[in-house]
Amino acid sequence: MTQTPVTTLQIDQLAPQYSEWRRARDSLVKARFPILALIILGLLVFLTIFGPAIAPKDPNRQTLVDRLLAPLQPNTQGQVIYVLGSDVMGRDVLSRIIYGARVSLLVGLAAVMIGGALGTSLGVIAGYFGGYIDDIIMRIADIQLAFPFILLTIMVLVVLGPGVLNLVVVLGVAQWVTYARIARGQTISVRAKEYVEAARSMGASHLEIVVRAILPNIVSPLIVIASFNVASVILSEATLSYLGLGVPEDVPTWGKILAESRDQLLAGKWWLAVFPGVAIMLTVLSLNILGDWLRDFLDPRLRGNR
Image (cartoon, helix red, strand yellow):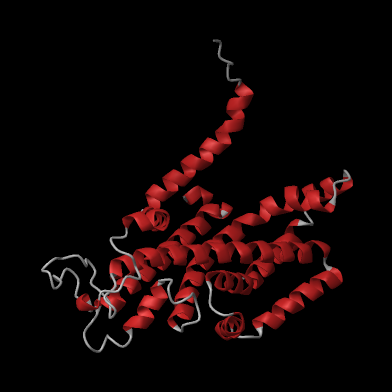
């Protein structure tokens, strides 16, 4: 069986891709902290996918005789089965944190995808066409910004009721203004470039110009904003769950675990708040560190220093 030789042209086409991957690897190794952030986020993704198989117990199973056991404290049978302790209803804190990771990552990524897609689309339309279309979209954005974010979210969730889907939609729609403003400004800057004018003079449609000439040149800052917004949405989900407006009662989340611990802190049951709080802190900190690295990596002015 003969093998097709690789031509010099094919090698030249693959070289930029290898160069970018090598530059990203070297930048991660030099920065160091983003590698640790990637490890933590990888563990979070692993728990999200394989959580039901890893969790030692059903997160909603109640064992009242084992209530409020400290981490590694033996139960009534003398067995250590609660690694991170149990809550006021005798539920395993470790299992609830593992299952809570699934909700946090799902809500964070899904809401950012909804907000990013909606905001980028409207921002590109406003920046590309301008005129009254731009005025209408930006005035809608100004009206939404006039309302406090958390108050607007609470009002909508009170009407729609708790639920993962409702929470994702509300948090996603609430994020679109940021993407729209950035996409609009970048589009206004890019649409006057020579390659856009050349595409227009060759008869390219508006859709072709936007997809092939504008979007590839404005996507970098939007990706950076998205990485930061995932952390913001996770904190918002925890806040709403803490207030009882997030997901249904039978769905464990980090914010709900914190809310259930507030009456036990004064009694010295520190593990009920510390462990979910640490999980939220590590996730948000990892996302922010990765966002900082991504911002520097995608900035062409810093390419010589990374």
